[in-house]
Length: 101
Image 1: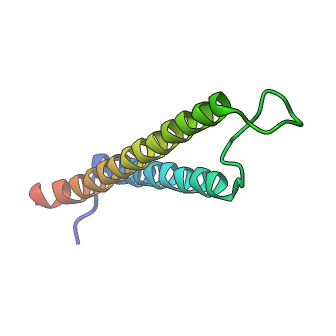
Image 2: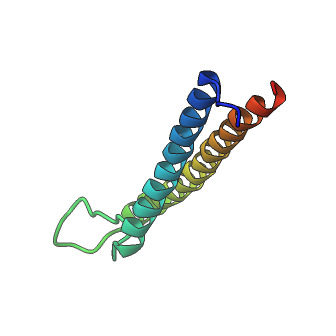
C-alpha cells in the first residue's frame, strides 16, 4: 500500500477547508435570508416614528429590499462556487497521488 505524499495531503486538507468555507458562506446567506423573512416590516423604517410611512419611505424600503435580495442571490452563487472549488481541489490532490504510482 503506497503512502500518500505530503503535497497530496496538504491539497486535500486545503480542499476540505475551502469546501467548508463555501458551505459556511451558504449557511450565512440562508441565515440572513431567514432573518429578512422573519422581519414583519421588511426593513421599512419611517423617518417619523409615530406616523404612517409616506411614498418616499415605501419606495426606499422597496429598493433596499431588492438590493438585499440581489446580494443574497450573489452570496449564494459565490458560496456555491467556493465550495465547488474546494471539492475540485480535494479531488485533484487525491488524484495526483495515483498518477505517480
